[in-house]
Image (cartoon, rainbow over all chains, first blue to last red; front, side, top):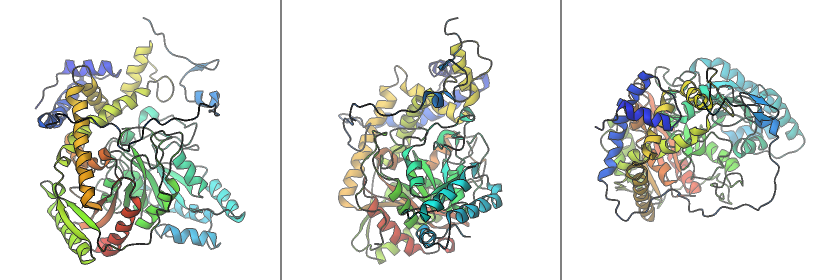
Length: 96
Length: 477
């Protein structure tokens, strides 16, 4: 089984912008190790010369006409924002 | 009033003036109140009675509505105008959708009435509906068991007769697995057949919408309303110009491949016996059934649990505490808003998948995990393509076991993932599949899974109709 340390879990959590309690990080370290251990069975598969698949129905270049179509009213889209002012979303300071 | 009657019959009676949308919706709400203890639902639509009156007025005005007055339930990851849309996650608890997608719009335009939103594993992550942040749903056949997931509330609601049908989503088995556990029909259509705009995204390369119903005929009738391209979803595809509603149930000459790998270790021996007995009955009706080996299906679950968490981690990046959803009160800067809102708002499984997905996509691991899994996916696609050169349909069980006890797998994520072992390949390949009730094991329902080539829903329904007729009353088997 793979071993994914707590430090590695915390590194990944930082990349994902998600806070974890020490207990969560510790538990995820064990679970991530188990899951990565399970998916590592793919390492033994011969995929030499096989192209990756990321689209299964064969659609290519789906375009629409470059014309303006109605969109939703700004007020309705802003209604779910936790904080807003003058038609803008308010965020906490970006720089420390 | 029995809402488990054939939808076509109810629609005919509404059109003939013997029933009304108002009456059907009232019956639905009464049944919901009487079966509340199963916790299949998260919220009632407060506009349901009003919407029913509008449908009755449309019928009176002579409109021809294919789902006239039919009450339905939507999994709570469908955006709906008059209720919250939570995806069963605390991070979306306050969210009210500013629009509805084509699936809900098409159902309403056809005269169907949304009565409630159904419970699910939060963000559709799970196989038991225990990952809901608002409490689990109980199995309608045995309330000590799980209903399956992630569309567990939807499947339970249909089995309980709370509405005539439900719409769910299936990323790796989330319609078919609960259909199998609850004893209803669950359809996973071809990837792209129903546009997904207005549904909370999970794994975008495999997510599909599909109906949960009491019969194959109901499933076809609902698909007929839902299917077809919409410009708002670039991955959506054109529908079959013919109706999906088929009366044909003739199996003579139908070539069926019985998937060998799905009969192996891990399959409950009583389910295996039921499948093999079904094969005999299909052959007696003229089908030609052969065992077929699809070795890559044994790798499908491992590939799935790389690819889908990777997509989940990308799709769930949008929940940032800034634009909508839960926002942490204690944050002092933007970075903290992200980290704390996501820490507080996401449950354990969403966090697990975000961490796995971010890990396999992170620098240095991408080729070993994500890219390799996409190549294994190609092998899987090639095996299915080759199999469909020889067979019209593939057949197997939907799940390795009947419904398990509430709490049995909740401490072991890997054991939970293994419930999807017979459903995920279909999603990775993008083909349609249907689960229909086959019989019972220890009084619990078990499903038969039929799989067809892409865009072959009509053939799938024809065969499923025949299989349904052969099975008869599955509760007696």
